[in-house]
Image (cartoon, rainbow, N blue to C red):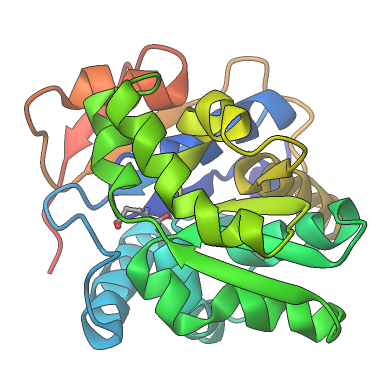
Length: 269
Ligand code: DGL
C-alpha cells in the first residue's frame, strides 16, 4: 500500500459552508480520505480584516499539517481571496487548490459574451480576487462583483426557497443583470445551496458553482502528483470544528447532503 496516497486531503473553511466542497469531493473522488476543519467559533470571516484572516488561516493550516494531509483545499472564498498566497508559501510543494482559481477558470470557459458577475462576501469583493484571477487569463473580460452578505445567514437559516431570500437575491442581482452578464460565479461557500432560487432570479444566466470545479481541480492535481488514491473503498471522513453551535449537525448535514458521523471540537490559537 502506498502511504502517500492514503494520506487525507485537508479541506478548510471559516465554518460549515465548506462542506459543500467536501460533498463535491466525495462525489468526484470517492476513494479519498478527507479531514475537514471549520472555524465555527470565529465565523464569519467575510466581514473581518485581512490581518485577522491571515492569523486564523495560519493556525488552521498548522492543524491540518499535523494530520499529515497530502493536499489542501481552501474551500472558503474569503480565505482564498486574502490568504491564498500565504498558504502556498507556507506549504511549499504540496498541492493547494482553492475555490477562486477554479471558479475563475470555470467562469471563463462558460461565458460567451465575456461579461461575468460574481456574488460573494464583502471581504472577497473588496479584495478584487475574482477579477484579478479572471483578468490574468483574459484581460478583456468584464467582471462585476456584488457583495451579497445577507445571503450567508439566509442560507444558514435554511430559507432556501423563502420569499425574503428571493427578494434579497433579486435586489443583489439588479446591477449585475443590468450589466448584461451571461455567467454568474457563486463566490461564497453558502451560495450553491441557493442555486435554484438564484437561477430563477437570473434567467438566461449560467451559474458557476466553484465547489464542483474545485473538486475537478483537486482530481487533476492529485493525478499530476501521483497522489490519487485508487485503493480505498471505505474512506475515512473526519470533521473538526472550533465550536459546535446549536443546530450545527442539522446545518452541516444540509450542506454535506449526508449524515456526519465523526465531529470533534478542537480549539486553535
Ligand atoms: N466561507 C465564507 C466564504 O466562502 C462565507 C462565510 C464567512 O463569511 O465566513 O466566503
